[in-house]
Length: 377
Image (cartoon, rainbow, N blue to C red; front, side):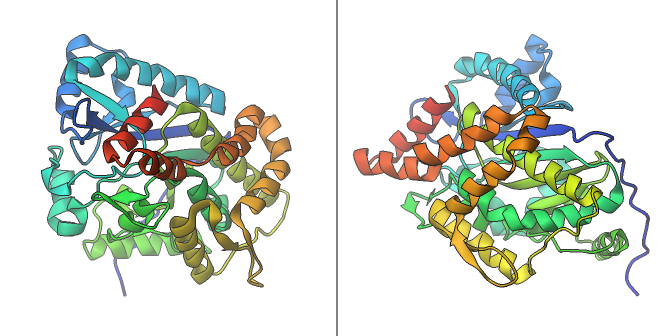
């Protein structure tokens, strides 16, 4: 019969508010390897009484800090919020001897030398997931967008999966792992889905099905808390948002603004179409799964499946048309310039390609790390 089903209340947001979480690694200034120095950084933050300390979070491993915004209304507001926090952290990194690094993976770090952040939640995760959990040297960007009513969440989430490959290809920044070129634009996407509650979401039609799923997960001990469902796109009922966790780590503010603007516009567009009475298009789970793999493997060179008729198209061509279609939405949300910058990212070359170019030129993975650090600075 399954576990006892409890109602999951969705605290709807009256506006399509925005929140951004930006994971950044700490790298040693001399070796360019990962540095387990987050505790020292947090000690400095506490000692200095930094007034933005609530915007700087610990993560699973001691080589990571996460910068988070408050509740924002526009992309420029979110980027200004993040920028202030980033400036605070950068003012302290000299004393720790580290730089901030924004990419989906580190090109040569060894998982065995990374230290776990203290806390029962993290210890339990590693105790359960073992080798795969300890492998998680990965960083991403998470974007929350407010949704007004619970009955909108699942239709928007399922329809948003159609744009999964666009978001992953645009942000792909994890082509190297353990000193090797993986052949993937986003090795992070492939790694993270190995955790038992991670990967693509189920495409539920009714909220009661989601509640049934959560009840079964809790009854069988798979999760203790709702936030342990680590889907690439997931509802966040307590915040009243849909959280998009598709993207690889991002190395600079300009690209981050473009990615955030695209996500904000996509979700608001779907929300408005649903409100207007449209039945939102969805794709079969097996097609969504294939698109994820193609984007992770081939990045901006991926040929993606577009619809239930299995029409196919180069992801960048489809993205170019999408940017034009979303222009009115971006204007209404105050992020027209940021959305337009997505075309510049594609023209200039996305992160995974830039990393390959640096390595082809110098033959030194430390130079790859340095190039990513320089982009942030």
